Picture 1 (cartoon, rainbow, N blue to C red):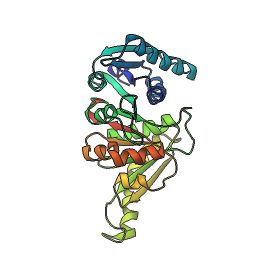
Picture 2: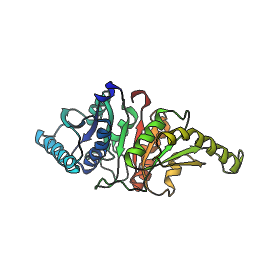
Picture 3: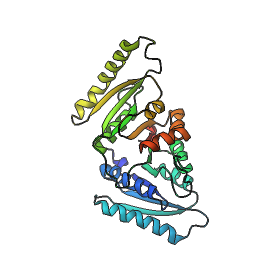
Picture 4: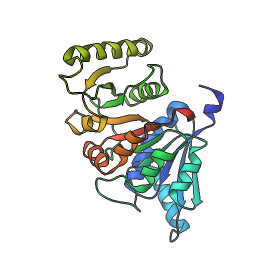
Length: 272
């Protein structure tokens, strides 16, 4: 890893909610894997007291220490809206992690406004975290990424890293967005999967422990996720595909992801 990358911390947005603590716990593994600090950021707004902020940060610190992982913890309390504070912090962060819904913008089945804004405006990879309170990964969980462009892309590299870090199988999806009987039918699917497998081969050789599954679909990623897919713990998407990001953090996408308990990682390839 480059020396400059080591100076970048993982930032977790804290607001006193269980979702924020869950995001901070998810972020611990990111920090440990990079050997960088985990910075807990609390942004105060009018009506917040310093004691409220310190209590929320303290609760997150206690939960992280209870996890027993060797991570350096930094804390920061800033004044101003959370969205602006997190976006500014993302300019010098390796990743920013937030809960899907915080205290101020709670709507069942929806992504909060802070998380949605961060997904489209962060200057580094942004994680919108959902999941179980116990923070235990399930061995059957999958990390899903839709493959486009070069097999050596930053997006695919990030997806491989996350699958390895989370102990998840990587499901690489190629979308043909045509009816199964159109444009070559099953034979075209076989060719697409064969090409995808060739593109994935170097990653399998580099990481023999990586479990990879390639799938050809005839729908968009959101439609695919809405159908029963087993345990999907994480979806990795490219920040430059703004339409896809907007769909996944919008009302329908949020509901689908919430039902699955699935987190979202938006990868900004310019800032990895």
